[in-house]
Length: 140
Image (cartoon, rainbow, N blue to C red; front, top):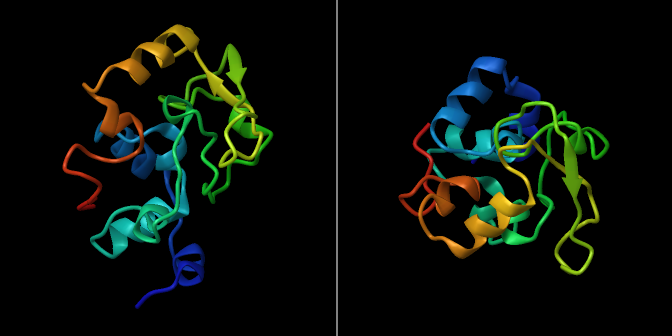
């Protein structure tokens, strides 16, 4: 079995990979996460989900607590978590014990009202939580 350390050393996440993942419905943050690409290399779901850990973004009142990648905590507030455009604001989820207290950026299209609507709706939710509609398996 390939370890996460091996993937971190072997896989360089390119802009093309990020754009491809976003086009498949993954969030910008997930598309930049080494754990997602570990899953893709293993024909499995994201490493965090595979290990039974809780991860996700603002739709789950989380701040991607299992994220591992080149985006630092400070950088996560500079880009929209959904599509990666420059952020116009940020949210934080201190009340959720699984959150790390990170500020997560959003753009005008994916702001607090949109997040609240997505939290109420089941349509499109699996993809925006960082996984395809098929329940979490990413087939790379």
